[in-house]
Image 1 (cartoon, each protein chain N blue to C red):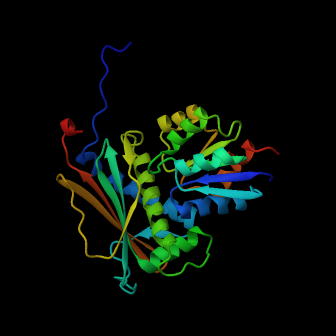
Image 2: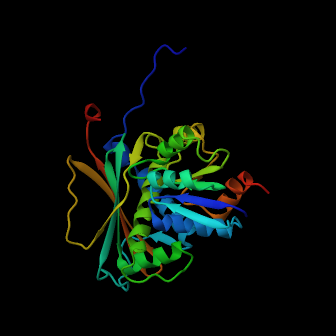
Image 3: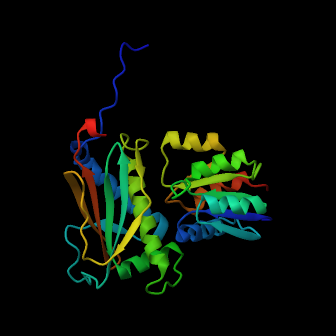
Length: 125
Length: 177
């Protein structure tokens, strides 16, 4: 797949896991960017064009939901699918994420099928 | 319109100690180990005496709960077991002893366990927040709770390793929430 994927998670291990499972689901990109928190993600988004963002919610300093708000305010990543990958999956949180601009939601733990069903349809064929 | 609206009953120590709490913990542990690591894991009363227990170095991961319930989720595991988990998370890639990714993997496991457990309990799902995980190396430490607390413990076994789970809930009154 053309373009770049940005994975945002404070756990380096989880970023690797997300990238591994994306690959297993045949969702591979030309290049990969990784951010350990919301500030790093914003800095990357101000200087790079990405095709997909996979983002954790529960992060120190700036939560994934705050990052979504900031991305919206700064008009960064317009039209780019943002998928939340998180242990939090209560209905209010999912609703909050969708309202803030997320296009998909994946609960940890997840499988290759979850990526196929929830991420692949968001990407151009 | 209803005549009156009753606020949901606060989650309390009695709810926490109900058998469903441990059932939910078991389901969460089994789901995570199958889906993320490809390991079969089961509850054991006492770990197999032939297992190398206690392992020379132990790791503990802690995730705090706040909101409708205050407390923590703790997992304790030997360093070799943690290394197996980290390797499984990366699809079987070799992990060197002392690699940072071992602590990282254990923290994520604890985060998924705490999240999965509380998400399965309707009174906590959207009313309880998780802290980022903390990982402690070694055995010579004590976790102090500010208030009286109740706890639930479980031992699991996967491959040749034991995993010890403890859930703590502060026994506080509704007025303090």
